Structures are given as C-alpha cells and as structure tokens.
Amino acid sequence: MAVLVVVTLWAFTEDTAPFRTPDSAITESGRADPRDVYDPVAAGEPLPEGFRQLLPRDAIRPVYEPTFTTATGVAWPDETDVIGVEIDGEAKAYPVAFLTGRELVVDELAGWPILVSW
Image 1 (cartoon, rainbow, N blue to C red):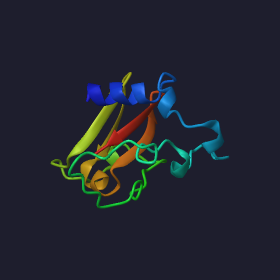
Image 2 (image 1 turned 135 degrees about the vertical axis):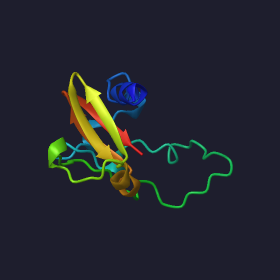
Image 3 (image 1 turned 90 degrees about the vertical axis):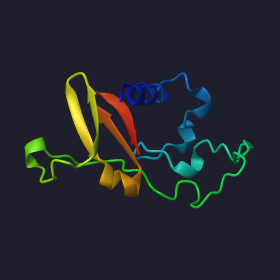
Image 4 (image 1 turned 45 degrees about the horizontal axis):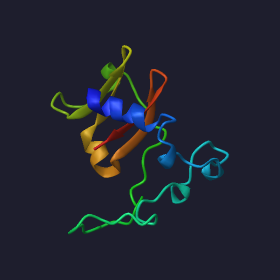
C-alpha cells in the first residue's frame, strides 16, 4: 500500500513535466478533458507486442468525486475486500467490488491527491 501512495504522490508532483496536463486542457471545473491530456499512442509510442486492446482509451471513466460514510454506517459483510489508504492518521476504504467496474478513483486524503486503482 505504501508503494501505491508513493507512486500516486510522485505522479502528481511538478517533476512530471512531460506528463503534466497543459493549462489549456483544464476546464472551468478545474478538471482536464482526457482527450486533451498526453496520449502515448498518439505520441508515437508503440503498443507492447501481442497487446490486444478490448476497449478504447478512457472507455471506463474514473470516479472523480467519491462519497463516503463512516465504518459503522456501512452494511458490508466482514469479508468484503477493500483497498485501504491511510495518510497522517486519516483513512479511507474503497470496495474492490465497486472498483472492478470503475477501476480508478481520483480522490484526496489528508490534503494529498491520490489515485486508487484496481
């Protein structure tokens, strides 16, 4: 889990200039239109040998504004698989069953931007 947090924090730092979203791609809502963000295929990067793409890029939209409840307010069975993230004593859990359908959650935790992926 620590690796996920470190990689996520690294991905959102200013040092990732080749992958930073251009200011012109940011909409009034503060979000980028995925069609305006760096596309490695359009940039000429080859696909891996034998790669078979079933869905087009960005066919599964990330969750940008997840909602949460308290741990006691959830009626999940005890054996529910979750991805848990904790930063500076603040924690959130993302159910794997939900992530199987949406795959990505863009969120913030303890003031840090995070990306939860399954």
